[in-house]
Length: 396
Length: 141
Image (cartoon, rainbow over all chains, first blue to last red; front, side):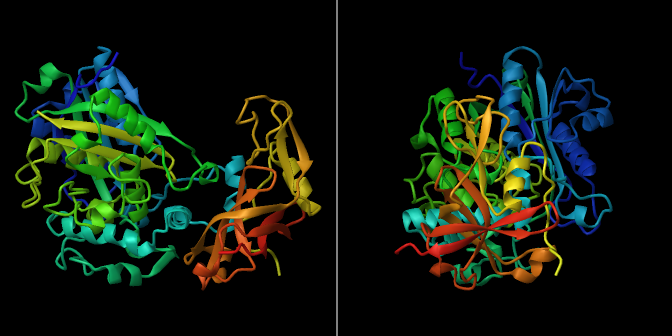
């Protein structure tokens, strides 16, 4: 039995300061500021939250808030975890277990470098997959993802320059978003518009990925509240309906990625489209994970919004850009807005703002980038192109 | 010179592989039920979920599936940049990752997907020999 539209996102807010704060902040602080902000935005008292969803410190957050939630969830599968949390929150609401779910993210991808004991991701060296890849000098996401770009280039005859269009257009969106790290020269010395040449001549990280093919590494805190329809309709904020939701995975370690040119997004999207009773032609806005230009390009292919091998053309041909027929990553993306390590919450917040009509005048309002879209597909990708969560959101 | 790069710690599940490596042999796991080869070593066959796995000596050859060139690295790898990481489709089935030798990381476009590669092992310490790959026959472009 489908539970399409049995819950809505009723509010979405960020921490007070995101990006590169001057004074280092902790993940806990980023969580708390965004929770306070989403409570004030919606008028829902924090004490009314009866389900809590986060990746790695769920019980600590609930304790910090003095909550005794009836639903506690810690699905942690990388950046798509938050899309998956919304899916699970809607299931819990539909099942009658809870009424109001908090999905929350706090991650000091930037500040952790300055805070003792702030490092993340301990490596489990008893894992056979880790044993068979740790000798080879890979470090961080780019060192893995580049293999996928090379495979895409080989199979489809694409080039790194093709994917550079994604970075250029995404930066164009960032110039409309004052909270984007790369908004302008005022926000960052390398901010403001960029060209294909800038992207291709940037320092090489892992060939063929230059620095401008890669996302930022910033701080971010964000929270959304998911509530049952009766509550959603009673609030001062506009509901954004969860019409469809799906999740899937193809592997955990890149060693097990069968086809380096596709992700499980085609499966999570299929589930979400079916639940929503919609298809690619119904989508007016796409918010897709751009940890790398490559990730966004392939994801658009997986979501059925571009033919295989041709995802990059949506950016190259201007469709994804401001004023285009299918705006993509209107916040400026993980490439130029903000990427803390797990970027799924930033996507959710932008989806809520665009569809609730508050992208220009909501809390932390952003002028000039409201798309008036009525439907959005939101796709998170976690791990090394491993796990995906897809939501189809609909305006009220 | 002492081996200065990360050295894995073998576990019971992977020990037959490391025992083979010490003798310069590529040992691979194979399911005794469906006969399919899998990599990395598993408790259960990932294809049929049978739990009796045997090890056999493989050819040590495969084809280059995809690659990348690492320009940022740490520890012992820092002085090797740009070096080429690779995924190799093994002759016997499934895929291994590693570092590819016999290619020029400064000319990444010259590396040919589909090239025939041969495994070789470097001694890291008394117990662990690390596998590397080398192009032995370039694919035609």
